[in-house]
Length: 545
Ligand SMILES: Cc1cc2nc3c(=O)[nH]c(=O)nc-3n(C[C@H](O)[C@H](O)[C@H](O)COP(=O)(O)OP(=O)(O)OC[C@H]3O[C@@H](n4cnc5c(N)ncnc54)[C@H](O)[C@@H]3O)c2cc1C
Ligand SMILES: *[C@@H]1O[C@H](CO)[C@@H](O)[C@H](O)[C@H]1NC(C)=O
Ligand SMILES: *[C@@H]1O[C@H](CO)[C@@H](O)[C@H](O)[C@H]1NC(C)=O
Ligand SMILES: *[C@@H]1O[C@H](CO)[C@@H](O)[C@H](O)[C@H]1NC(C)=O
Ligand SMILES: *[C@@H]1O[C@H](CO)[C@@H](O)[C@H](O)[C@H]1NC(C)=O
Ligand SMILES: *[C@@H]1O[C@H](CO)[C@@H](O)[C@H](O)[C@H]1NC(C)=O
Ligand SMILES: *[C@@H]1O[C@H](CO)[C@@H](O)[C@H](O)[C@H]1NC(C)=O
Image (tube, rainbow, N blue to C red; front, side, top):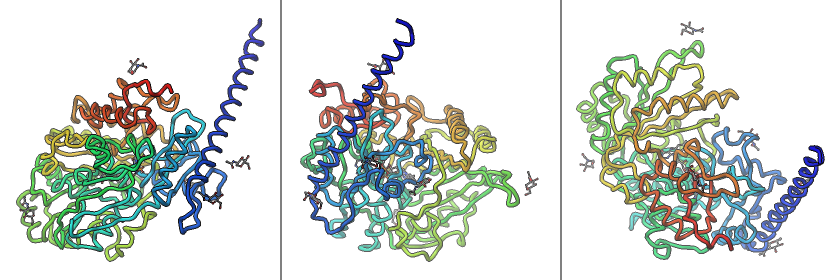
């Protein structure tokens, strides 16, 4: 037999295998959709369709509706074969039932801010997958008397803050400041914000939850049990179930808070001294005061030449301006904060200020999911620092922001301490607690098409920071998801290898990773809820049949 016949018969086998797979996948897809239409009751008052396939004219805009990072909407990125937008909890149950029955893998999307897009992108080598987009399940029910609220997973933080403020000016919730982020994803991974030094993470303030488990059952805290309730608060809920609602504990906030947002030039000696002192002190000051820093290059007003490093200093204080100025003079005199830099406002208004909306903008923008600063392609990485970066090293690091390949880099720095120190590493899966001085986010955006060049720069930069970052493991935050850390095996729908998964798993969760595996094995042994960085179950024999 010559090579030609060998390869041509091989090709034939491949072609028939391919058509078999193709037919099977088309069948799966059609059967799945058929199953959905028969199991989703038509009792909703709206006439909007519940699912969209690539043939539907609205498919792209529904898919794009919560993608804020255009790296993840480019044509080369995998797209779902169907997007489902349930209006009712029973619809979500039907989706789980039908996807199990017809072998359709799912992704769960709330706010869509995942930094690798894993709520709507699947890199698994499968013929298709479905996205469950929870945007219509976004009600918020605030109970002032019990200082709690039930918030559906598809609500944004802006919606949560808005509806809390509608009911009370003296209640708040400690979560992130970006109003378009979803509560489904953020609380499932932790949720750090301006109130965290005082009250901990969003996930530290969850009283109850409702989810749909791998069997399609609705569970609450009592019925799911404490192990599963532990896992979904910071372990990345998408490995365990579909969160429908969180019951959140509301925390007291004063009638007015004081905020400021100033910038300084890093060339200035007083600024340098402020930054060095901030590293040592920001995690130890009064927990009513939280000061975030951002570092980025400033460009000349005539051309794009980078002329220096600008330090943004943004703070909130739970108290009045007089008290704040007194405290700043004592703690951070080098900043020279002035009364004219400060504004007193309601707690909820501080989110408009911190998101840089015009002053006087209506609170309604908190309900607007489309208002967002930009859609540039981006990639993020994150570190936890336990030691201050020495002065000369910091200068070298900031010098790298002037390198050719950068694009637009922003280094954002968030102080820990306070309540974050008091919560044990294993209280919930989020383990970054006592000993952390601050968390650093490296956000890189670019305006050209040269993704590889910029992302390579970010990888080198991250590598150069190794000596100053946490060690054994070099810890990071699951809510700044990074596929560079590794993934489950992309073949066969994401086969898992615990040794391999522990490389990234221990970076996100430290030793809590092993308890997460235990919970996963107990509640989802056949790995129905799977994605590139989902928690793997220990092998059981139930998978084979
Ligand atoms: C501009 C910006 C600002 C940010 N600011 C902060 C901040 O201040 N503090 C902070 O802690 N983080 C912050 N983050 C990170 C953010 O918290 C995470 O990206 C978070 O996971 C986003 O949640 P989401 O619902 O919007 O995302 P999605 O992309 O919808 O989901 C993220 C992950 O959670 C899963 N998931 C979503 N909904 C559910 C559900 N209902 N049930 C089970 N699993 C679900 C998804 O499958 C995916 O794995 C920020 C991110 C961005 C882009
Ligand atoms: C919903 O409506 C569609 C079309 O109107 C119909 O084919 C389907 O059977 C209905 N499903 C249920 C569960 O009533
Ligand atoms: C989408 O449209 C194409 C071409 O019009 C058709 O062949 C295909 O069957 C359609 N797919 C679905 C899922 O409707
Ligand atoms: C989705 O977003 C991408 C990139 O931002 C854009 O190119 C595309 O046109 C958008 N599609 C729709 C339907 O808005
Ligand atoms: C924070 O503010 C509250 C309310 O004004 C006050 O009771 C508390 O003492 C302050 N915390 C610290 C550490 O000063
Ligand atoms: C950019 O503008 C600055 C003045 O702000 C000037 O000194 C510099 O030479 C200009 N650079 C280029 C490349 O034109
Ligand atoms: C699991 O991953 C480890 C580390 O990458 C590798 O050494 C090992 O061979 C893998 N095991 C299996 C069964 O694939």
